[in-house]
Length: 139
Length: 374
Ligand SMILES: [Zn+2]
Ligand SMILES: [Zn+2]
Image (cartoon, rainbow over all chains, first blue to last red):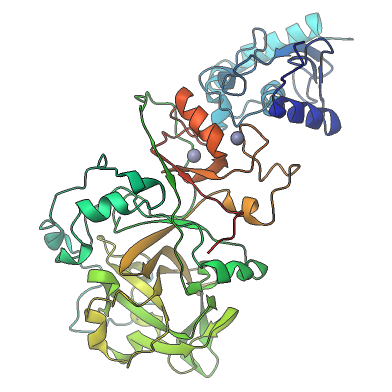
C-alpha cells in the first residue's frame, strides 16, 4: 500500500543507491514501505570511528523532498534548517560519513557541526572512539 | 605594481581611471515600479518596463541607474546559431537592460551565503524567457592578446566568433560607453581603435592584422587591470558588429548606435599572467538588438540541459527536485538553472531560497532549451 504512488524521484533515488552505492555506505529500502531505508555506514578509515559500522534508519516523509529525510536523532544541519530539495538520500548519507571522518569547517553544509567539532576536538575524538568501541564494533 | 611596464602615458588626455561620479549624481532617480506587471508579462518580460520607464537615450550620461533585471533571452543567436553548439559549449544568457552597478562584477556563481533571517517573499515573478537573435557572437573565453611576430612592440587581439552575416570587429583600448551603446576611445591615438571586417561563418578565428597592434607598455598595469569606477570605461572593448561596415571615423562612435544595427560588445580588463604575458579577462558582454541594450549573464547549469534531447537517466539534465522532468527554470539573482517549472512553483510555496545556493529567490525564469523554434 505504502509503495503505491511512490514519487518518481524516490524510485529513481532508490535505483541509483542500489546500482551505484557510495563506498562505505549501503542503503536499502524496506519491502513493506519503500520510504523506509536501512542504512549502514562504515566508520571511515583513519577516523576515530574506524572499524565501526553505524546502523541507521532513514524515513522519507510525505513532503520529501521539500522536507528533509528523517534520520533518528542525528544532528545535522542539512536535516533541519539547511535542508534543500536539491539534496538527496545519497548526499545526506555522504554528509554523515564525512562528518565521521573529518569535519570540514569550510563545508557550508556542515558549518555548525564543524565549528562545534573544532572547538571541542580532543574531547569529541575521545568520545567518538569510546562510542565506536561500545556501540559500533564487530557488527 | 607594474613599474617595469610604465614607461610613459599618452599625454594630454584623461586618465583612464577618471571617475564619472560627478555626472552620475545628476541621473534621474525615478525607478520603475516592479509591481507594474501587465498581462503580457509571460511572453515578453520587457513589457512592463518599456511602458513605465523613459527610453534610455533620454539619460544624459551613462551609467544609468540600476534597475531590476527585465530582459531575458535564452538563445543569443537565434535558430541558425544552434549549429554552433558543434563548435563550442553553448552560452545562454539572460540579459538585463542598463544595470550597471548592480553588484555583479564577475562571472562566477556567488558564494554560498550564510544563513540570515529572510522575510518570505509572498510573490515572485515567474517569467518566460524572451528569445533574442544576435547575429554575431564573440566567444568570451577565446579572447587573447598575442605578440605580433612582425612587430614585437605591438600586441594583437585574437578571438573566435560566430557570425551569421558579414560584419566587423572594432578593437578599442580605453573606450568609454555612451548613450545607446556608443563607444568612444578615451585616447584619439589611431592605434587605440582598429576596425577589421569579417565574413560570415561559425567558429571562425579572428586576429587583428599584424602591424595594427598597441604597445601596452605605455599603460600602467594598474590602469589596464580594472574598469573605471563607474564601469563606463574599460581598458579593452571589442565591438562585434553585424553587417554595414560603416566608414571608419571617430565621430560615429559618439553618436547613438542605430536601432537597426546589431552588435555584441565585450568589455574586458587586461592582466598579466604569471609568465608576464598580457591576457584579457572579460568582465561584461553587452548586446545591442533592436535598439535595446542587454547585458549578458550566464545561467549556471543550463549547458547540460541543452546538449541533446532530454535523457531520463542523465542526472545533469533533470530537475533536482522531481528528478523526472528536464530542468527549465532558473533562479534569479543567483542564476542557478536547476528545476522544472512545476517544481519551481511548488518550491515557492515552501521556501524562498534557491535549492542550490540558498540565496533568496527574487525571480524565477522559465527557459525552454529543447524547443527549437523560430
Ligand atoms: Zn521538477
Ligand atoms: Zn542559487
